[in-house]
Length: 626
Image (cartoon, rainbow, N blue to C red; front, top):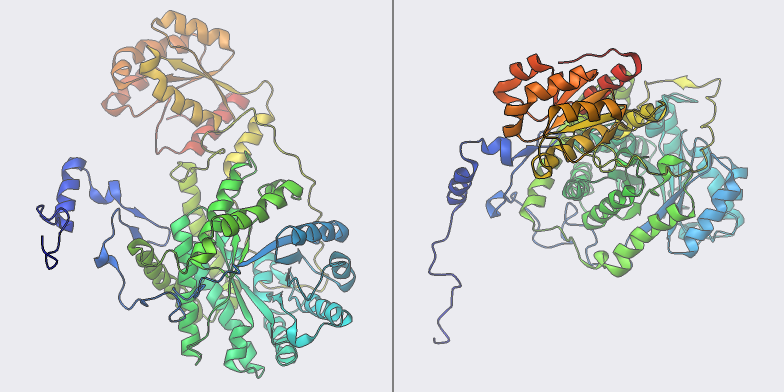
């Protein structure tokens, strides 16, 4: 081989095309639909393919990270400083406890703190921030009012500490739109509250140039069940409402843009959340360009979503928040807040806060995620998903704006209705376990010791002069329905049980017996297992002595076709109030029903409906059957 010759690896093989790949896949599918088996569709209608190629790459991408102000503009030089590690602390409880926790966090690696409460007055804020070096540790605020009073109280503390206003950094977090969406009320009309925030921004523009005034908070929409595109569209619509108020108050466009912090949620959809952060910057870049500031770079906070967290088997929450934190870092969030794994049980303890901050520190200091500029850039899948999500979210934003803006959408109830429909669709996926929840709807541990945490204090009473503007968006969680079933079972005495009527040898019945155990215990009904039965009389005797009132036949299809009629009849004769069969009955449905099988449980069935019906039978002796 000469120096001019090039060795082409595998050059003797023809280069396969995408059509060749599809043909090969078609042979494996054996007549089944490619779309049904290998494609999936997101809640926003985006089709996810199993394979992406360079042809999938959207046109017009910036070539290098750091160029432009959109999807690839995060962390443009792979900064060694990393992102802002921000921990949230509640002030609805004892401010002294929040102060102790905040100081511990700051000593152990957190770089800024966020104080959250329905309202924050000067006295509670001073107690919560005692000992905090305000010139070193930025403070963020989150309230359920317009936030101006809390912001003024913080700035007064800064003045008392003799910190130079021009050098002070903080996120004041004023967000009357988010507050009214969460609570349905403010002490003054929303428009007046927004104008009040804009006036504060105008007053601080020159004296406090490094203080960010408002937060456009998408978490309120996401935790009510909004899809990623609706969350992003509503977030940008909220931010644009603030921009209009700022410019009306006399702020230059660039100053108005710099005063907005965009907050979005991250959950357990790793690639979807990476794309969501990148899409948010694309949307904000469009807004900035339209109003005359094409060089503006968005500032984005990512918060791990309570929507994805569970009370049962809360240790799994550590995995959920780790996925979210990683997605936030790779997606280029400037600020990341990780929710403690035990936050759904009450006030997080020291372990919960420690794990939350160390999740970020491990990703930053051990995995060095922050040293890679736009780590997801160039992935054809992520680029395609970013592009599609940005377009969907932009349409949502346009729809909100064409209806008069986000405040009008909330006041009319249109946005709540839209999110409610999406929540129902997502709940249907949870009910059928198309969206499984580990430790809750899958692999439930009925013997777990539920962690105990101090309860949160009340959220405070609504002011007598409050203005009711909208129907509030509820804070929802995916795991709630299954957790309620578990609680329903724990209230019963004796413990609800189901007898697994395993037919044949262990190797024959174990797959469906394991599936059935998982099915029933997800709702708190303990499954009583056994080695299997070859004799129907022994099966009936074992059931009668088990104390169970319901039974589930478990075996292979071949065994079912031979043994189900006699086995179901034997269970009925032994007193079974309901007989389930694990698996699809196929053409034998009518014969099995005639033999005494009441219900067929299988992959894709409505698990929640079946389990609620089982409880109705166990509690009252009545229930629907099919």
